[in-house]
Length: 120
Picture 1 (spheres, rainbow, N blue to C red):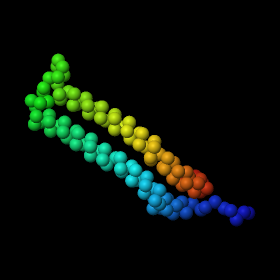
Picture 2 (cartoon, rainbow, N blue to C red):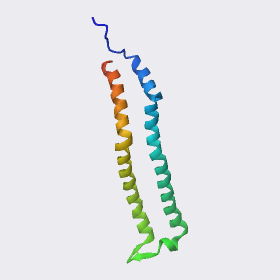
Picture 3 (cartoon, rainbow, N blue to C red):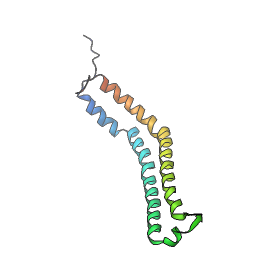
Picture 4 (cartoon, one colour):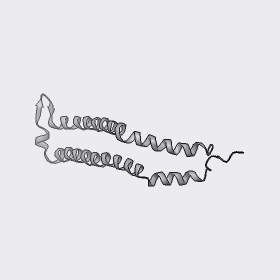
């Protein structure tokens, strides 16, 4: 028998806690929060503006721009545009700042958990 035995399964939870406490994981969480929280606030404010204008500025929202297309319709369609824009921006942000770090962390944890056998 060799003295180089795989790390026991009991050490995997310890490794997860160590990773959770690491600076790399803290940076990963900061990168995620740095995008998600401001973007959520911005989108909520944009949506609230749409709702408030629809409720209290009916004359403005009813202003016709071209034919039967009014400001309210344009604002409503821009809600969809902004949703897709945020999704695209998040995808770029994740590709650049979140995924590489998450992949490194997952690979490090994978080295510990692969030696512990199947779980079930």
